[in-house]
Amino acid sequence: MKRNTFPQDKNNRTRSGPKGLIFNIQKFSINDGPGIRTVVFFKGCPLRCIWCANPESQRACSEQMRDDVRGGFTTVGEYKTVAEIMKTIMQDRDYYEESGGGVTFSGGEVLNQAPFAIELAKAVKKEGIHLACETSGYARPEIFKALIQYMDFMFFDVKHWNSQKHYEGTGVYNELILKNLQIALEAGKDLLVRIPVIPHFNDSLADAAQFGRLFNQIGVKKVELLPFHQYGLKKYAELGREYAMKDTAQLHTEDLRDYKKILNRAGLAVKLNGSF
Ligand code: SF4
Image 1 (spheres, rainbow, N blue to C red):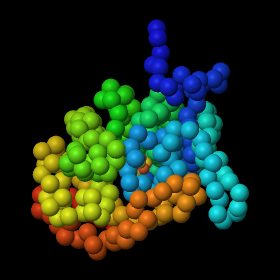
Image 2: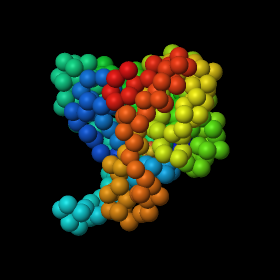
Image 3: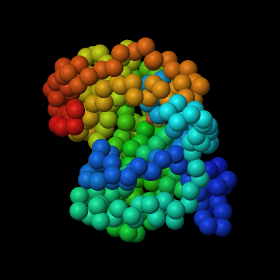
């Protein structure tokens, strides 16, 4: 039978199995799901959010990045097998068990390398480890369904309630994303929708009200607000890329209190600054 012919899968299959393009594996994370977690960062994303704090995650290839601290350049992105990543994951198994933690797939966009991610997800679940993902939800529904069946928890980003505005800020429309969100909810997935709140893009109180309406229609119950920050600023310079939002002021938790109230009034539980 013919195999799935995703470009990433076709190009990166070796005798030792499929390989995924990974740009970081972060151990002992406490912000990417319950407990202590190992976060696997997949390189390559179909979106181009104008505020992206991880521009080194966007391109689906390894690339050179200037290192302004140590000097010289570092290579971002390395092809790794399931076995190589599992070796790192298993080093912290005791911590996952003690803390109720596990593994989180992040990015970039994990759905961009779905065939490899599915192989890795199967290996994680075979070890009985809790698995989460952070996703933009942008993929064909059959690919989305194939991956999320392995997920115990999902962070699902929705960047704008309006499709045209979504396109202007990210380079893609939101219909497919909302369809996949609905699929995940109908599948009974435990998920937290996240809104990155971005100045002049989706930060008005009218936007909050529209998000509330949309989420009520779809059946979303829990939302997290992520205030715009500038943690990625330096990376654009190190990659030699323009950053459209370099002069935009950061938002703070207190700036989003009214935004939160409007979503609360729409019946949503809203997480801000780490708690609901
Ligand atoms: S979806 Fe995430 S990784 Fe992709 S461009 Fe947007 S912010 Fe960056």
